[in-house]
Length: 333
Image 1: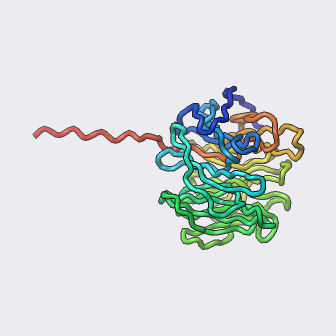
Image 2 (image 1 turned 135 degrees about the vertical axis):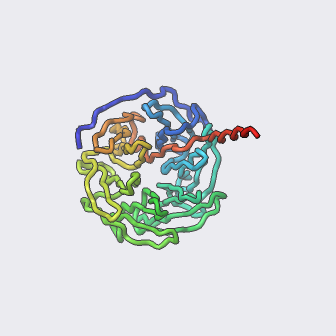
Image 3 (image 1 turned 45 degrees about the horizontal axis):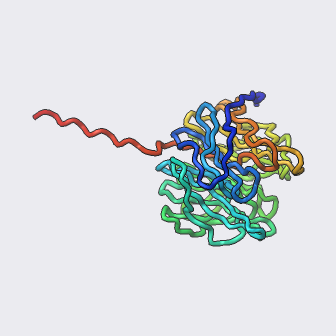
């Protein structure tokens, strides 16, 4: 991979923590990033970026946001978790294109932390949730109908993060655990049948995290090392039949969420982990062209604080308010 060129774009200076705060409207082709912020209940955000990289606050007052996904109407769905001092309580927050927040659904199980989310073609929302009560952080994939009805779709034996659908409707899940079948990309058919898609060739302390498909059906996977990051972290590429190659390397700032824009550019969220809370660990969003050339799309998003940076990414690829087609002009008789 060629060296990443730093391109720093404008960011809003003011940050409002009021729940439901709105600064801008969602727009087609804009990028949305979940921002952990100070990591406290109500201290997190969704940042919005125009295609040229202008940053603004789309939503604030959120609780530990992780996975983000846009539906066919331009609404953004965000996986969140409220911590009550002893356990996490997961919920899915729906944010309209003009920034209005509401609770779409809550997880019936306690102490599950929602992570990656993805929509199928029928409009059902799938959510990966880590069981913090399990010694291996075994994870469950929950399915929510468009009406918010919850069911259990499947599970992975380790710490699950990203989800992504292929064009055939199969769901792929990243299992970053290092025990009981972890470090695996799992494939689920539409009926929930699970199989191993691939076990990446990576170091023992690394795990797959974010997932995204390109237009050709290749699966891109972010690889991260524990809570420290490592010189071999980066993004792997897998062909539809599971052949592995390296797309990007040297991403030492904990790469996680992935998303493709319409032009085929890959965006990567770097969380900015650091085990020392006294050492700032701001995260970046990186942009890679299809040929692998990378730049820093947004830098130092939340300066300071451990795990304060971007977690997951999503594009709004459909207009939030589609314009109906004009009525045909009657032909003269």
